[in-house]
Length: 494
RNA sequence: CGGGGUGUAGCGUAGCCCGGUUAUCGCGCCUGCUUUGGGAGCAGGAGGUCGCAAGUUCAAAUCUUGCCGCCCCGACCA
Image (tube, rainbow, N blue to C red; front, side, top):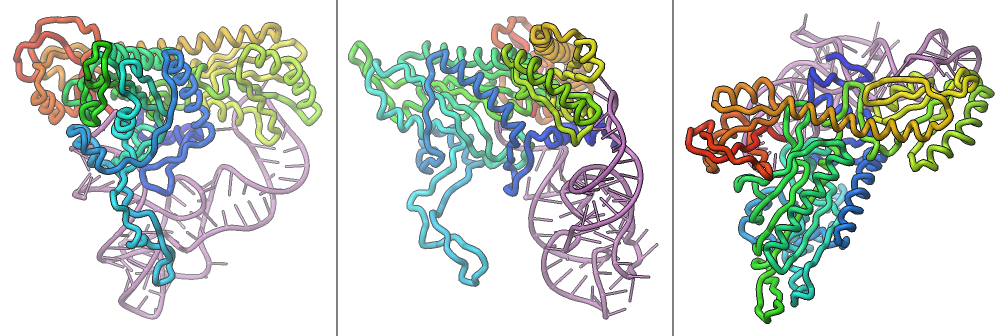
């Protein structure tokens, strides 16, 4: 298998390419516990940028953060019937609270004396603990709406895991809101979907399709599940975020009622919404290439790296003088994150390759020649183009370039998605497109779960969503030929 | 959990079929010198329970059995 920089080529083995990238770019690695990962500083820095941007958007729409416990009494989970069914199979369970020295002197064993009266589950999501708490917080319409978010880790004991895309433990954000009316809760659900879409497109440069899930793909316990769906470079779809209208399901399960203005008691209406470290996977797979990561400037921990080209210690000092006194202050002043790679242990070519691997959007190289001409060499990661520009106004030039890169990678991803979205009207075409081209397939569906299941069995493709504002159009289901009123979006998904 | 693949130094590997000195090579690492506008060169050096366990044998990286990890495909899922 051929590689550049030790990375498998994308078109030879996409899965291997992805893994190589995660490891070589220092984003994450596998841990001693199967299915769990260590998020390394560089990977975590990207996540922090995502988190900060999202957190700001949540706060701007009136949400506040809180923290609910990791452990959930086992009995809570079973209060909402479809919720248990959805999560029971992948829960980690705490049964004991103490260890003791092994009788044979070899290490420690679980102390059978220390069995928990009620077993605890490690949260796979927090609806149950949160709604059991909301019960005490909500009495009157004056207590509503309750708009809370939490940043937390959750555990879902998955059989097959992949770094970032699916891990047993992952980091995420889960919003849980309570409202007096269904309309308001639905509005909240859609608002958060909108925020996710905006975040994906503006920050991640990732075009997404907003839609609603079919009953089959709905969150366990929700009335409606909305989602944003993105397309990866291998033609597979990835659910990048979900927002659920919970109706009164959890309010009823946990007996959360409020008294309205009219003095009548009613169950509250709920929503929940989340995005996870899976977004890291989406980010990587959407933009990167055979040379490594390509990061959108708005999420890059380092936006500009400066590489000095020098001979001898004196040469480095001469360049550093200019870089430290003029270039870096100017760039920082402009609000840019800058890294000056003045290591004298690596050569320039090595540094170029390394920072490309890490996806830094813009690289400046400055050598003796530039000092004389008052110029810098500027290289962009997305297109690999290089040019020499005057040192004067460098901050403005880079700022503009970063904006352009942000737009360009979005545009590229959008064009890719457009090219890989196909309308089909026959079963034969449907199968062929999925097999040969991949991507999203717009096709008619008769609206039944049964048909959806058969299609999945035959092609591995699932209905990713029914797009919002989907044009209504009479047609026939590609599988059964039954009448259909609209096309839905199919794809093989992560 | 089912099918397939794989496990030898931090990483990638040769050796295994056909058992036999001190386990091969490359990258990386350390020291020194020379280098520095696209992954440097030379010289020297360090680094190994051959995934784990049991068995066969005078002798096991190599053969047998069991177990474990990882990767891919399936069922499940964000």
